[in-house]
Length: 391
View 1 (cartoon, rainbow, N blue to C red):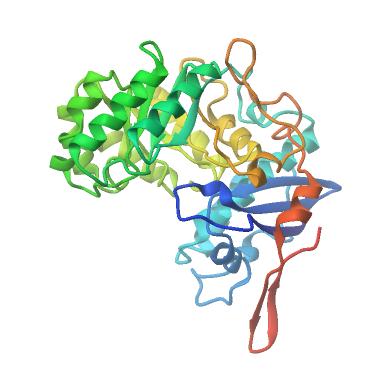
View 2 (tube, rainbow, N blue to C red):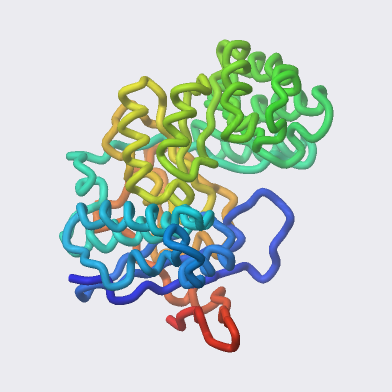
């Protein structure tokens, strides 16, 4: 069969707030081939990413992504790898390629799973999908008291792990950050797994990050996530030698497998976090998961949006039994929560597992698309270069 159509849906909440919440809008990709369709989600700014699909060719290594996808054969997983490599080659200098390719790759795997009537994780070679321990992923409160109340709510909802990130953390004094972390530990209780996300706030300032280690160690924090930007490998390494009991986590900013490989090789990470909506999709994420397993680095999914993205993010390590912890967004917008007709929710043991249905195992909710869809048209010299699809 051949790829007959690739459609994009730009969805957005009525109001976008200036906070670290990527669930406020979404870029969905739908691919149709041979009477089947697959869906993917890009973790990206929708408009600039859509433009990468049909932008005019600048030169041989800066072609629109559509040139490597539309009309190409799609009969087995090897074709996904071939398309992936072709996109990388022909759109090498188009820097939005990785974000766009992520949604396309995810949709291709979803479609292939539906065609072959099997879940994606089995297509990747796993015999079984092991349960994952979800951590309630949310932002810090504006005040330590608000952080305390959020942590209490996590415990009341029977989550055994929680992550607090962004917000005021790292923006104020060491004492203020100390109070937030202690509030999170108090609210979560002595036995909960506590994770802290700095959101790259210190760029590459090792000293600023080091000043926060005492509170993290006092509160038995499992990891400090993204203290620095992903490329600051030397800063990560220096901090890892100081953090002792607190492991470093990072990698959500990686846009290809080799960036993640470098972080595992040189940054001193205890946890590598990969977002299938950014790294290029399920294909490179699976490569990272396999290498992480060999290097004794814990693989963790990254996602803060929909259940579709959550399913895609778990597939690459679904069959790795010892890599158990899993990001689980608990503050997502209505758009993200209602994007699919069914949800992935913790079971009575507090664990989650990817759906056993074909592909990603989730169906898109058409009413949600209709409710939040934005029409997009791109013109060049009055010629329509791109027009978004009506469902």
